Image (cartoon, rainbow, N blue to C red; front, side):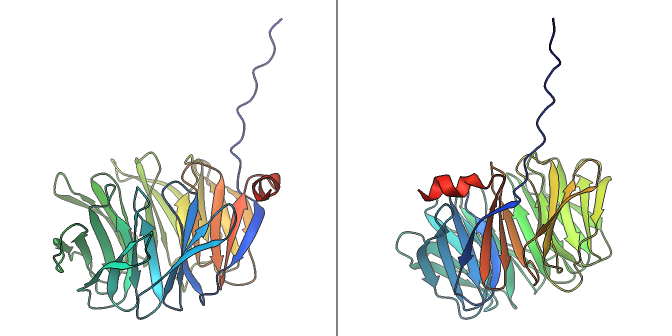
Length: 315
């Protein structure tokens, strides 16, 4: 006799608090997993960048060299370098092991909101309130950018880079996607200032959040809007949005102290995760596992799909 087929397991969501990290660097402006998810970076309003162990919540190194609060950071594919950007208008390339500044790059006319390495960490891309994206060669001693993209009519709030594409979000309400191989630019107009942009994990879609408290999913090839997700509050702050590790859920920070999870296909709210009483400033989803980092005020929370993970790891 045939047994009924097992139903596919519902994706697990990181809803159990594993640990809270007291960062002691003022307000945490951004929190980021590194490329393999074993480490996390925190950007502080006290001008420091810190590297932590995710499993233990221990501080591994502090990077000091910015003159004002640090707003974003990224780690290279091989974990040997970090890049960060700041309200001091600079982008810094760091040596992870020594904690030393490798390069300090000036050129932006205002605070730098976002920074990311390309896949090989040969280029750093930075986006600023001055409306430009600057591309910096990490291997040369040149202090000038190799390219400046100045299509935006207002500040750049967010950028992401994939193999041959660059995605930017601007306060002018537009999401721009540059095809760097073909030299093409695709523009999607939202009408509300963009706070965060990202690619889906499968590379087929783009996600953007804006100050009308809405997150939008757009099909890259057709430009069609596949989904609109709302219910959270995002009216005043630059908040992060992202997709879960398997593209099943859309996530967003919220000014009401929660992280919102929506089912990507259905658009329905699946989980409203209570983080605290203040604004959830930043979030980062683990590259391969159901793990989530959130930042609120001076603390970072590490979330997992199962509570017993913490007990196993801490032994």
